[in-house]
Image (tube, rainbow, N blue to C red; front, top):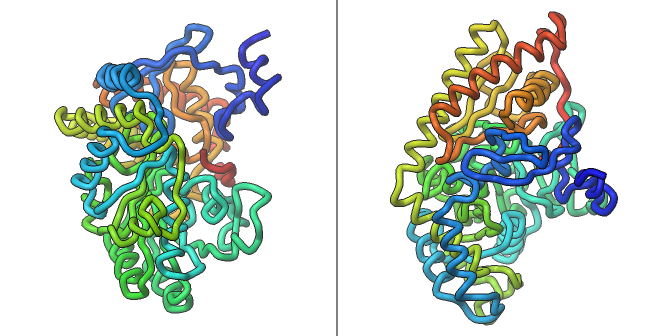
Length: 445
């Protein structure tokens, strides 16, 4: 019996997260990771552009991060009381780096951070409603677990990612179109006095990469300020991968609260919530704070050590310069390759993130633009990439990532393998497939 078969006997579906079981790759078992690569239980080597949905910006098993974790583990265990020197040092750096952060609390996951952000926004405002945007993912909790990757018939109405969510919870979330300032203004005109928070991925990377307009992000800030609502930037993906100060440091729009995730620690299980001191002081970590906040693993010495080592390397070495250059190479050369083959494609992204949508241009600005993406082709070429030792997650609209461990030779191989993979995909679909447009489907990770 294979490991995958053993897993399916004792783990529902054989995997421990909803999008790890991939049709056609159900027997994939990861045996080792290192740098820009992973190996499976059969000894096959893959150059990894999926990269666990992005957090290991330095590459898998970075030696400096691993050494810091080993040292911490030999010194500190989980006490679950008071605070450690590492937690203080990490909090000080996050306050220094991110424009919006005056105080910060550590969590174990990004989902926990977004959950607490919305809870404290409701505490601070005494209001009920939350605004999110179609295509954005903010974790598994009920108030935001809806309208991520939706089929066309589900747009414009609640589209929960799971059954079991109470209708009254869904009714307290307004879903708007990303990059639509007028929709934001209208929502505030109609509901502003009951909007506790607006939460947004400044770049919705859970559907690839929808780049925001300056007007859109400014409108969010203006309307929240005018109505007294809390603006939350979910920088679980954009934070640290795009800049040490998060995307907010690049776009010049400062939210009230910022959520962060595993990229702080190169993939170790950590999240954080930071922002205005008056909001953060509402948590029960401060005596008398009305917003309950707890977690035994919060500030675990091992993940704090990983975070400090990651931030040190991001500050001292040309990580962003290297990954941004390789990301631009990937986008430019993939676009040229598709154009040379006459394949309609929009290759977009930001910095070290890239994604190829199989659709005519221009670059998409909102989720409904992505309905033109040929999902069958998107998934098909990624499945064919596996045969060439290249791994991009073969699920619709998923982005790909470059790490500090990737090289120019890796990008050369990526473009070469992508051409072979798309040629095979076109041959499998035939000429009629050139006009095919697939419906959307599936939820995010």
